[in-house]
Length: 197
Image 1 (cartoon, rainbow, N blue to C red):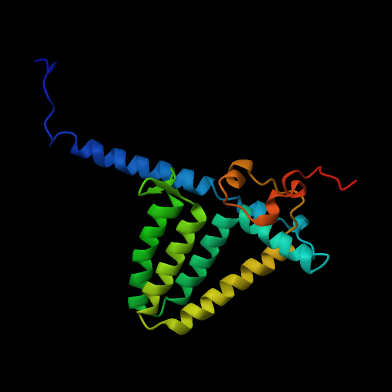
Image 2: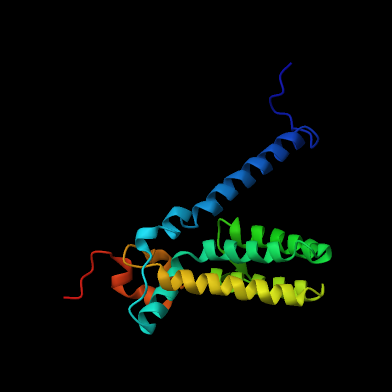
């Protein structure tokens, strides 16, 4: 019996659509994880050195935030998660917010468009961060949240100041989209062979 020219019923493709959804989610996870920098690159000991001064450390922090933004978000969210382990209501609120983080920031493969305008990644990350803090503040775990955020910011500042930027290549497309740090536009941060002569 041939089925040429027939319209498939809605009940038959349901299992394959579930499989397609799962395979698409796996592909988005891989793509999302590929946009972050490798952890080995982030913590390479040969690139760690104290900065020459305050201006150099601020420039390093800006460049490292531009390059390792996804890694830093994972670190801060992990520290926040660990601080909420003994607050089950806060943990539930955090898990709900993590689902939003996954779909709106980490696993998104196309720019977010709202009312016909493209929303920058920094705006999405900042909005999600503020919403996460607000949602968690209603669960009465304010002390844990403040301490976790302070630790997360300190980790970012210390790593950003100590991690040299000479070997980092800042993506020009990200810079054109406005998603990098201010000093990352400086050619010495884009090209490791740049010389000041």
